[in-house]
Length: 377
Image 1 (spheres, one colour):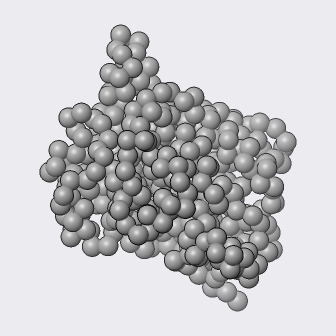
Image 2: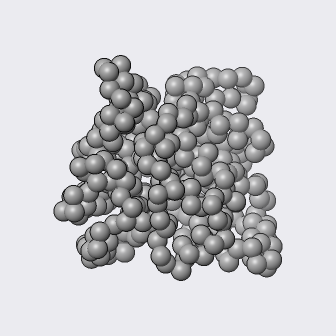
Image 3: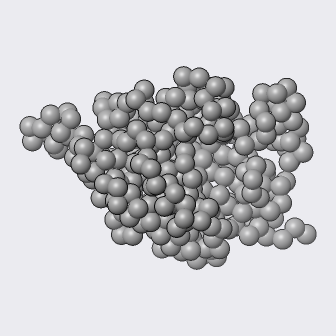
């Protein structure tokens, strides 16, 4: 009998770096900043495709609480080093007013290859996200749980939304990042695979044709990691508040534990088509937690608040087993106060109502993002 997966956790986050005085996105990191971060964080920080971005990654964590401690340390370190240069990180999937065409990509072989392969599509990727890895050692179990947990990807996206603005405009979407990202090939929902071997056969077709070098170039919203024995959730915006990130990580690992528990009892979550799940992805990126999603079992729209409570009930035993009930409960706080996108919009409209210009209102949003990124850490 296959042992229960470890359900370890790893979190990656991408930050945009802004000038504290102007609140504008930097075009390039100052000399010495990345070297200082690399010296302190020892392999847990790296540049991203655009020179205005920094990516961090936690170590492999045995609990949600350990992941929180790691993430707080990484955020604080990035903020402290940036502050020495008059800069600050913001944890938001888009900068409220930055223009993508003013940005430059990092001059490294990996990123030069991407720029050449994807052209203008990738130059528009002035977006940040977060990825949550959960350790599932057996590859067939990993693929099976990927098929099942896909149903819940829109539910977790809704909790994370942080990108309501693009190039200084209010987009009407809570996660505009999702729309930008979907222009890249091999994104969105993965297909359903019967086994790890079938997944590998599909990857081999693309590798053999010379389309991709390996499975790291599959950028689906949910994928078996090509580097680690994990199932990687990639659909979310980055959360501005660190406790929001941890709540989503707790929900994700609890859902996987629930599905595995049902699996050993010969029970499975019903598999729905990509078409149906993608409709819920759209509703999540458009409305966040303030809207509703389709309950496919009922065949009707259901308010997100009701769906969240149903998810709590589904994973109640697993959250207790994983000792993350408190962290999971924070999702109710997100629902009550809104996501980062909701707060950004509220600050923006309050400033406009007080007689501020569009630019002044967007500056207030950036000020909040700077402060909220490091609040409580």
